[in-house]
Length: 291
Image (cartoon, rainbow, N blue to C red; front, side, top):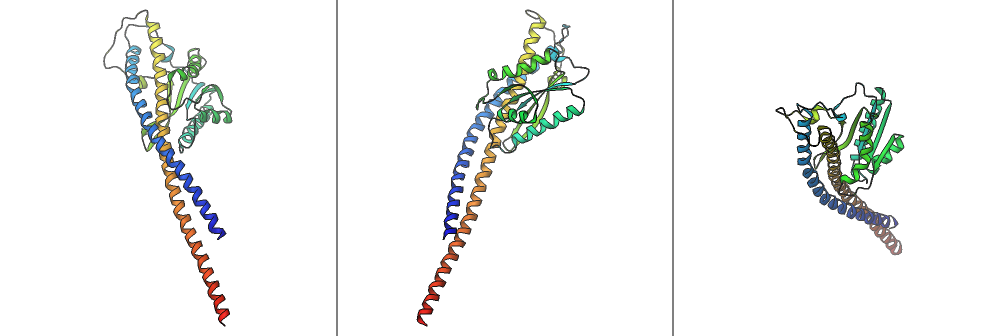
């Protein structure tokens, strides 16, 4: 019965693991709903400020061109903002976005990029980029379950200031876009310069009266727009994280149940074999005494 005891111990261990994964699944489901609400709540603001930025970028009376709207002749110096999670146990979410970021960096280097700077949002991105030997210029980790723009402004300002100073020709952002509970997509999108495709084109021409002046208004507005884009990416990534974690923990719970059933079957067979062996020994002993 020593084998049976080991199997019982293993069954107990898997049962305890199933309890943990089930609890984590329920917690992730609760956080997922809140993360989705925050993500959807941020979308109207991002859309409104996008429309206003599009109107200003196509305004008819100003000759001021913000650096965010000016494309470089050649793109040799690139900034990359990588958004990941702080914790694991969320399936392949971090693996997918980090692999995409790494492949993009290698492609840029192949195309002749001389300087690639990285801003890491999330502990997983920071650890990966450090191991990769990337040039990490700023970082933010341990943001908790609720992202705050105040936490992001410092790290992303390093990248934005470098672009405004002419030290970078383009800035991209890599994050996991939330599609639905069962599907999340790793994407890398151009952030700066602001392209017409991202801003969109207003249906009619717009004319503005600026106070105090066009340069101040456009500077502040486009900066807020870029911050809104980054915040939206972080909110999408957090919603994706909780959805991926819920799905991963449900799969782990189901797998634990399957393992328990298999172990119980093995235990029953081992116990039955032991009982049969004992009966055979008793019958054999009785026959020997009778003989």
